[in-house]
Amino acid sequence: MDGASLAQLVMSLPVALISLSLVSFAFSLVNAALGLVMAAAWLLSGPLVFHRPAEAAIARYLLGMRRPTPMEAERLGAVWEEVTRRAGVSQGTYELWVQERAELNATAAAGHIVAVTRHAMDRLPNSQLAAVLAHELGHHVGGHTWAGMLADWYALPARTIWRWILAGLAALFRSKSKANMACGGCLTLLLLQFVYVLAFQESMWWLILPLIAAPVLIAWLHRRAEFRADDYAAGLGFGDELMTVLAAEHEARSTPHASPPVPPQFLPPGAPPMPARPAPVPRQPGPAPKSAHTNFEARLQHLRRGAADRF
Image (cartoon, rainbow, N blue to C red; front, side, top):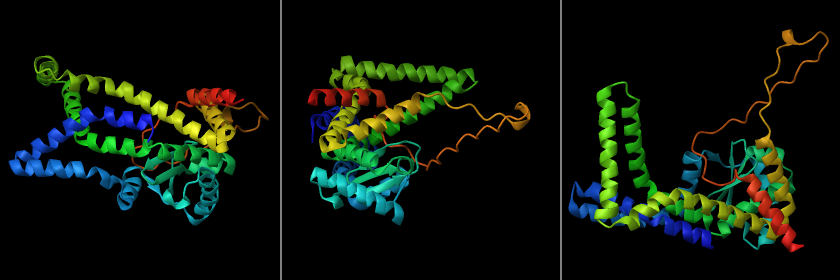
């Protein structure tokens, strides 16, 4: 586990403490002893997300992944064997899954799962696909994946309640009724007053300030983790291939979308028909795993600086 993983766990402690309080309070409404028991059970449930059957269920039903077909498994197995051989890692330690997403990247999705997009398999040669998988292996080796999953699990109750509060306030403010809008304003003021009392009158600033700063700090930690995983892939000898992938993806994201084809009746006489826009890759239901993969330019510059330092 590297520093980015440890820092992410430390940053998640305040929201985990709030989640623990919410779980205990909810079940204490039924019975005080039940509140203590369920709070302890919830704390102990965290490591269960790394149980392989639980990981498979999360990957399939929450993240929209699937197991590779026999043809895909054959190709992925050969590429993965090369990556794990260079890394000195057992090939069977991690499972390879496939995501139906239109990105040229893989995802370290769970404690023992590496998912590669079908779009990447269709577009990348084996050498570049190996570089992408080596990057995701770097996330696993650095502990970024399990630290992120553990933080997300323990933050789930607090985040769920917060989303419900925001959804309720948004519904009140979107209402055309003046009474509902006034109610939303009053509830917002009460919420701000509650935060003020906790932070200053109850001297719980140590809990409130990390919650306010957490989004910025966690985004920085995610970016740092991406750099660490890129360095890991470059250390295995996949630096040039990974830079090629990042450069291609950055160029694709920077290029404006092509205009739709002009209908034949509006073309000049004798002009060839314009090609149709390629159909997008269908997306499976389910949220995309969190990552900083989209910061391609910064990652590319980081890899180039590392390559220059080595030479």
